[in-house]
Image (cartoon, rainbow, N blue to C red; front, side):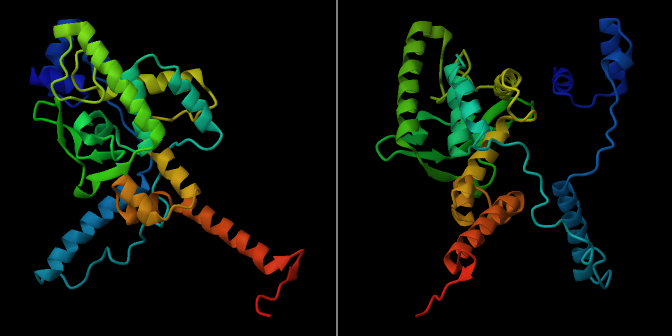
Length: 304
């Protein structure tokens, strides 16, 4: 069973297991288990991780008097802003996506994608949200959990990605009203399905049986939205909604400390990923200052 789960999840299997599986399906091993080799360059984020790991090893060696200097210390580091942000929605594509999102007939999928977009949640944070995490009186969402996997690969409700990810987010009146309506519909659905539906974790959104919504279901609907709306970025995915949330905050002039707090991320990481967005804000700020100092090309006296 464990080997089957490994194959289903796309993990490597032993040669013997591959041969027995191919024999069962009466197909060549090469057809069922293709070996893929990528020649794409490493991402800036991966290079950063490798450099930091190697540097840590050399630092340890220096501390133990094995070597006298760190050869990685002078290596060229990843420049600020080079970490890839990925696809995101801007002012033009946001209305297109929101219109497509409203047409999704699966209320649970719709509310999960809405939470990712309007609160900047990771998909695991959204899928693990319970009704106890929502304080309607104060209009606050408390992020306390995320989806993880146990030893068998089964998805379970676990801790957040980092301690910083545990956070409380303000809930807009509009989203608060939509969540309350979703709760009403969920209770109605539970009453109609009876014993066939059991939401034992009291999750905000579930699959048809009341269990944790699978990421593959979100991915499926995101694909449908992309295919039905060619104006959207072709590589738009679930995590792109978090990028969109952050990009919009930056465009509105929200400072990086506040943005990082809302995302449950570090200021350093937010600055690296969204460096170009902050540069655009700084450029616009300088252009606005030019309007103060100059009128019709003439420098103004600021002190009379």
